Image (cartoon, rainbow, N blue to C red; front, side, top):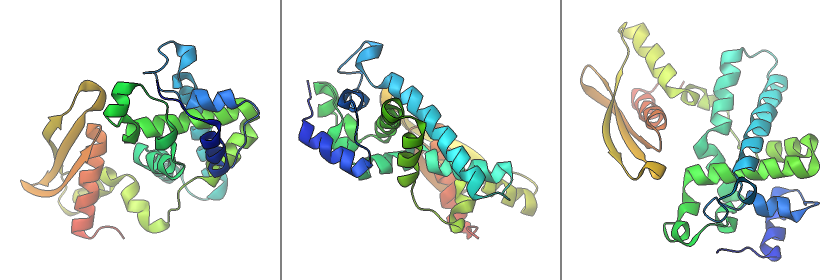
Length: 229
């Protein structure tokens, strides 16, 4: 079994900007199901809680920050801020990959470096902060660790929609996505998708889901076609 000492937990709390009243909340948030199979022994329940707190916090934050943006644009910005790859980068900045408590098999497979697992543990930590200190503290921590972004990223937030709108305007028909590769076990799938228009490949993307791979392929196509603006 992997363990984590109080010294590392103290460093994590410093980076997080929150000191737990009950340190066991944080330990539980860092405990993968490969260590504790019962619901009360791993971080999956805290992940469930943290995901809800994260969605509410980011939605409320954007609602007040951009009072004139329509719902669709707010949803696009939120999708950037809470998507798996974004949350995984926040988790790495906090060094959660070094703090995660996993079983021997997962440790050998370097499971703690996967985006999907890092996203889950970050949400569990947010859930633990909520449980330990309440919503206001959880909201403060989440907002402090939101990634920086700017308006130039807007066309990339929902790249598939941006690309489709472009081709509907110029050609009256959408691009087509093709799955070209699928590999890995069920718990850690990887997909490669190409986006084509009239049989011409415009971009290729890889992701842990088909949707994620399609978005990455669309981002490549947007860059290739110069549609960022």
